[in-house]
Amino acid sequence: MSKLSNALIFVSGCAVGVVATYQYFNKKYEENIAEDRESMRQAIANIKSEGLEEAIKAAEAAKEKPELSEYAAKLQENGYTNYSAISSDTPEKEEPDKEEIDKPYVISPDDFGEFDYYNQISLTYYADGVLTEGDEIIEDVDDIVGEESLNHFGEYEDDSVHVRNDRLKCDYEILWDNRNYSDVVKSKPRPIELGD
Image 1: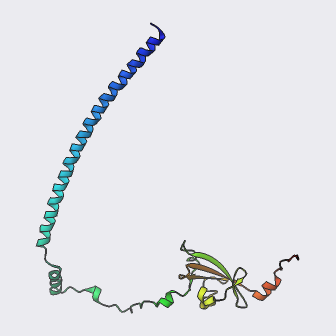
Image 2: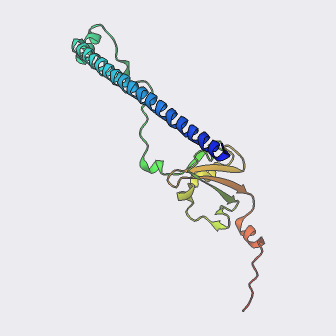
Image 3: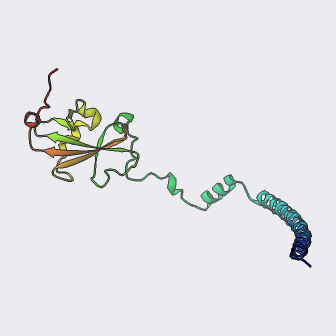
């Protein structure tokens, strides 16, 4: 026998083994799938029948329970007090005006940056009453941080005040500067302008 014929016999033996193994396991898996399907059908049928029985029992139990109004009448007859209906000595909080909600308000330094979706902006308040963001003067102080908030230096920290503006979704850190804004502007070097 030649090497070629030995190789062909070996390859054909392997092929026959693969086909036989495939057919065996294919038949075995089909049987397992059929068994699983049947057990699932039985389980679903059991669940449906048990669920139906439970629903019927719950409906019958509900028929036997008295109405809520009957419970309330029984409680009143026996002298039970409805404590939720009694007002307390503390006055009810009035709902704040929409205008008040939109106003900026002072917050603690710990609350600054509490909300990830709020911008955090640093401002400078100079001794001469000028509020700036960087080099830009803020004209409408009341709308941005509320003029009243500038009176709160020293409440939490001596040199800063933190303000939240919910309408603008911003937290402001206002830092105190002992200098006058006009002196700071004078001391800044001017850019050199080159001629044509």
